[in-house]
Image 1 (tube, rainbow over the protein chains, first blue to last red):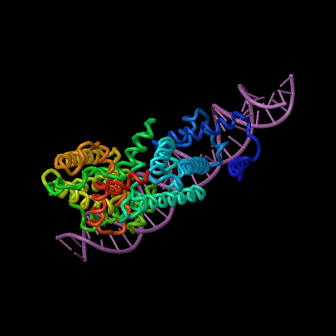
Image 2 (cartoon, protein in one colour):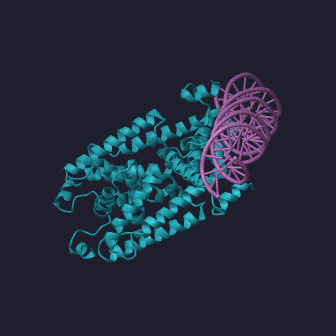
Image 3 (cartoon, helix red, strand yellow):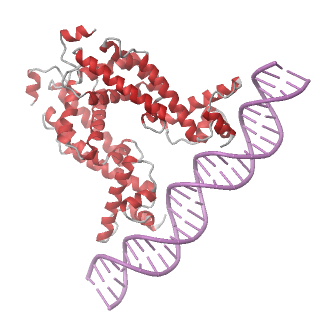
Length: 207
Length: 207
DNA sequence: ACTACTTGCAACATCGGTGTTGCATGTCAT
DNA sequence: ATGACATGCAACACCGATGTTGCAAGTAGT
């Protein structure tokens, strides 16, 4: 309704002043940082975290919803990018799997809140991107299956969900700027081999 | 402060009328049902879902917090029970692992909201129970490791977190009253074997 | 039947968060 | 230096949720 809301909706209306754009960035980053540990944080808290007044936040984002949507869209785009640059459709399955994992972990450790929110719907663009990524993931798994990397008898969607869960878990660990490559190795290793010992007499003895 | 709050705090103060106790049950179950899909549900919504007036809910539970705590405690106790009856310290590791998984899944599919909430702190009893269960879990894994069921070189805490994540994922699937045993089989299988094909020439070919 | 308890309903006070506005001050761009 | 824009601050209206109370009607237990 108001002038600000218009500004939020059509983003590149007119060139913003240099400092203003910086402020927007600052607000978004601070919001992510705070919301990651407290999803119910107040606009006041977000503003303080960004070092600005609450009214300033409202000048850039008409509503709280608008702010969250901006975050969501941003994260979704980074997500798609992380997956895309790993060439999941072209590279050899194992290589692609590893690359995708590492890239996504890098994004997810810094944008955990926005990423999780993107998983829900509400934001159409984010929902679309997520659906596409999911499809890409299953597709990659199918290729892996055909290459003999994944067992032929497994449920690909269950596998995908497990994969997502592993990444989610690894992302928690690496929240403090951990090594994405090391985490990716662990994730892929766990996904492929699990935690059990190779089948043999030993397992029989355990029962 | 008020009479109701006292009643909530010391539960078995005096024998409640038969129907009253039934009402409390109904409210808790309805609350779980609603909160599972909408954690921010209103007291009004919870009341309507239970088929009672909002004021009635407030008569049984002084505050929204009190209601949630009751749910949390309940779920935590059921959780501890589910783990305990599987004899995780005595039964053979693989058997115990399967039993624990199936039991926990049965509880978690019906009390997903309260269980997740119990994972956070706030409720001291729930926090204690969860810590104990975690310890039990690691202990079980250690036994499994010694029995040769789990590889000797893995990180037990990472394995536990993966295990939790798998259960969480399986619980989503079985929300509509799925077969806990079947899900447990899948969870244990995934945890032990992962999704990869047994090592061999094939994997080399994939790179 | 009688009492004690519980319920629904309507109304109320309160509180915290959101979104808005006006104004004085400050900063950017030219 | 000057005009345009951004900011902080204070104040305000508004809304929805929470928690409380009084009362009339209904139900459990004896």
